[in-house]
Length: 135
Image: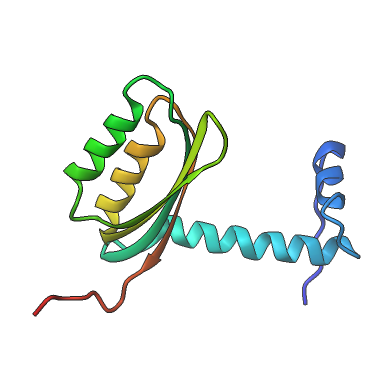
C-alpha cells in the first residue's frame, strides 16, 4: 500500500466523516473505487449496451407526460420496459431499461433528463457484450 497526503477543506472533510466509517482511509478507498467505476462507465464503450434510466418528474407540468411518451415512441428501438411509480400527488418516478448503441442510449437519456419538469435523473450504463438477436 502507498501512503498519500490529501488537503481538504473543513466542509468536505465533514461530509466524509458523516459517512460513518471507522477510519478515513477506508472511506477514501471506497469513494475512490466508486468514482473510478463511474468514470469508467462514462468513458465506456461505443458499442452495444444495456442501461437503466431513472428519473423523477412533475406529472402536472404542462404537456410533459405527453412529450415524454412521444419521445419514448420516437425511440421505441431503445426502450425495453418501463416501471412507473406515483411518489405523491405531484411527482412520478420512472425507471426504464434501455438497450442499443451506447451513444444513442446516452443521447436519448440526456434528452429525457433535460426535459423541462424532470427534476432528477440518472443513467447507469453497462456493456452488452452479447447483444441479442431475433433470428
